[in-house]
Image (cartoon, rainbow, N blue to C red):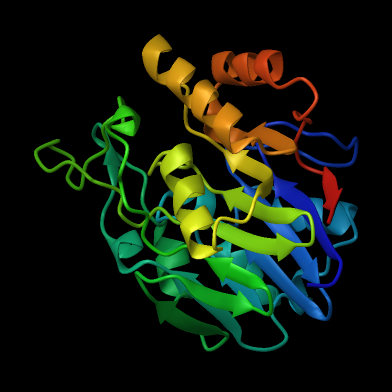
Length: 273
């Protein structure tokens, strides 16, 4: 894999004076001649941040959506409206389901759902791992192997809260470098250790070089958080960038346990591999 540049276009915090924050996540990926997005944030800051950071949204040819929540899919209309050629949009079929947190709808916003029917969109639904560009892969559906990562926070498929959402649509993106695998997380609803162990199985146990994105540990118990820290020590990523939904307490714990690996994220942050 040639040089890869990741630019954070949306996050809950900012690292560049010219960028604005929102509750959401979006990575822009430059890989050779290819331009991709992993998630699109809510869409409130995407166009402005792209312009401020010198990112041409019109050149994006591929979007991978980590799951069907509004804070990862809301920017889709902005991307497809800017597109100069058809954009391949990868998502798990369950991302299209209604999704609720309590009585609040948190699934794909109506405009994002409509955008999937745009002439500039080529929708690719899959539960399986697959290559989205040379050397870049989606994980597909994540096996839930570790009972320790059973979520404490429950989402639902209905506003009455009768049907729990297992969030099987949760997927991540990974790429290979000579020093190991780089993994991008959306919200890690499947559990960060489940995800990383799955990626290692898909990559013949190659070392994990970097983990960037949301770890969704804000509601984690002290027992689960400690288990996650111990498991990450086993996996030993050399770069760890906790963002978005990780939670301030968990971010502090990660920085305390891995001071040499942790780096700040935030809109405007750039990472080269």
